[in-house]
Length: 137
Image 1 (cartoon, one colour):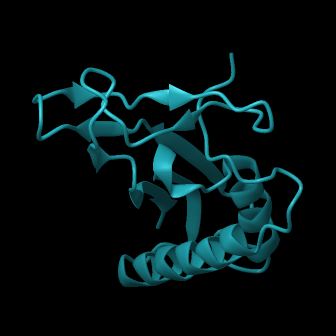
Image 2: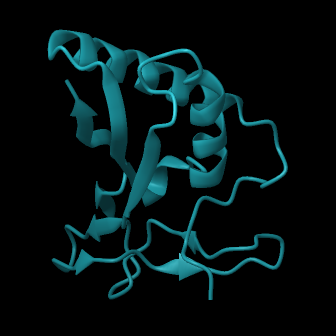
Image 3: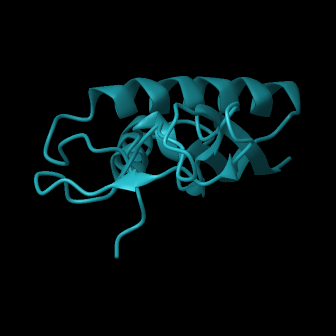
């Protein structure tokens, strides 16, 4: 079974990922300049399951914007942060309930409590943050 991801179509133009990659590169370049880094070797990013960011598209966009920068030849590593939900009705906290739709290629996280079927709130899974930057001075 595939890991749960957003249910967006996989064949769409990666505009969302391109803007994220551009912002990521700008932030890493500012960090590199501040710390006197001549070369960035690796960037590790944490991306929540509920963000609808497609990892492979983000990596492709990252590769296209790092040319002629201190990030050229750097590696982008993406860690998927699983979704977690909390139910104020029954106290459940854990993975969300997933729904399989015949039109989606992956399970879709729902905001229905797996225990009591009431609405839940996401407590994890919306993150998109730089975890580490490895660089050479």
